[in-house]
Image (tube, rainbow, N blue to C red; front, side, top):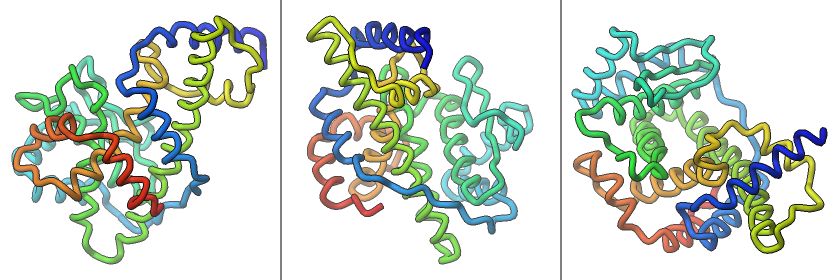
Length: 268
C-alpha cells in the first residue's frame, strides 16, 4: 500500500477520533461480538419476473396513502428505477430516490427499502426526524421485514432466507471495519500514535463508501443497529402509526435487546 494511502488513513483516524459516537463504546463492542461469526453470502434466487409490481402491491395493501405517494413520485420522476444506476439511495438534497436493479429476486427488497426512505423524506412529517439520524435505516429495515410477512407463499422462503443471511454477512463485514477503526482511534487517543497498521484492514476501510463528516463508525453502525432494532419492533411491538417507530426505538434498552439478539436471534 502506498505511503499516501497510509497517511490518508492516519489522517482520518486522527480526525474521527474526536467525533462523538452515538453509541457507548461498550455497546459497540457488544455489537462487534454479536456479528463476529463468519457468515456466508448466499446467491439470490431469480424467479420474480416483475419486482416493481410486487413491491407496489405490498405498499398498496400496507398503506394506500404511501402507494399513491409512490405512484406520484414515479410519474414526476422523483423515483428513478434503473438497472444502469450506480447505486440505490435517496438524495437528501432533493429527496429523489434512485433504485438500482440487480436482476435477481432481491430487487423487490431493494425497491421496498429505498421506497421506505422516499416515503420518510417526502411525507408531510418525516418518519425518522433528522435529529435522530443514527436511526435513519430503521424504517427501511422495518419495511423490509413487513415485506417478509407479506410474502407468505412458500416460494419466497429461499429469498427471505437469503436476504436475512446476507444482511448478517454484510453487517459482519461492517462491524469488522468498525472494530479496527475503533482500535486505531482508541490507540491514538491513549498514545498519540498509530503504529503497526494492518494494511489489509486499512485498505478495506479506505474502500468503504461513507460520509466523512459523520465518520466511519457512526455511518456503518446505522445498518446493524437498524437490523437489530427493526427485528425487536417486529416481534415485540404493535405500531399503529409509523411515526411512533423512532420513539419506540429511543425508549428501548439497547443492552437488553443486544442480549436477546445474541441468545435468540443468532440463527443466520
